[in-house]
Amino acid sequence: MTTVAIIGAGELGGATAHALAARDRTGRVLLVDAAGQVAAGKALDIRQAGPIDGYHTRLEGTTDESRVTGCHVCIIADRFGGKPAEWQGEEALTMVTRVARAIGDAPIVFAGAAQAELIGHLAREARIPRERLIGSAPEALASAVRAIVAMEARCSSTEVNLTVLGVPPAGFVVPWSEASIGGYALDRVLSQVQLTRVEARVAQLWPPGPFALGAAAARAAEAILHASRRSFSVLTALGGEFGVRDRVGSVPALLASRGIVHVRVPALTTKERVQIETALGV
Image (cartoon, rainbow, N blue to C red):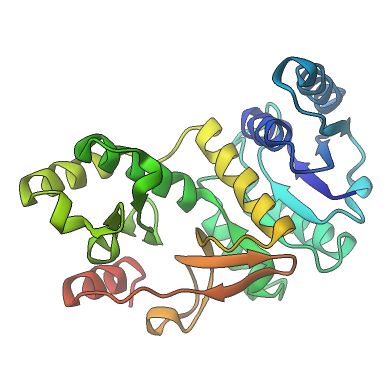
């Protein structure tokens, strides 16, 4: 039985657990939070909705962090009642380092919008391989951008193909030259006026809300469990992409059981390359 452990039963942790359960492609979801019986209560609530929504995912809640041992994917979310809620800083660095040893080679997905710095510290100081460190927030942003483009093009968002690069929020870049709608280059479907309108709205989409972040983390975990052939926009420690090493940035990547298995660096125009290098502080 495949198991996904979620560290933190705050709003984001609960949204991620529900997204995983509702898609019914994960055998067991374990929600872990030190705040009393909150994790157990949320797990029970989501489990009781199963007969209504038609899913059969097994959910459990616990205060015992050691129960993450043996999980196939571990998601770092937010603490119930914590300030800040998302796991970050020195406390998060210590906790994730401890959890990483307990789960062996299982990938770690960071669901929050403010965990890029944590990923960088874990890669540099804890020496966790970058393939195991996956920030899913850029995929939530990419999904929001697809929705905006679809509204402008009057089509379904599933027809829109694009990715997000850089480091949100200060320096994310959408490579429009690589984007497409229904198999056609984006600039053949949208006019320059429409694209300018989209770009103005994109700048206001960060940070995504907890349900979008939770859905993105759930999709990333599923891609790891089932070796999806679709690429995801993820944060990771760069290993030479865009001429950068040991900094955290967003790239399109393929995910499988060991984490990131392939990074797809898109071809960029000169303008886009300058934008991404500026965003990454090159």
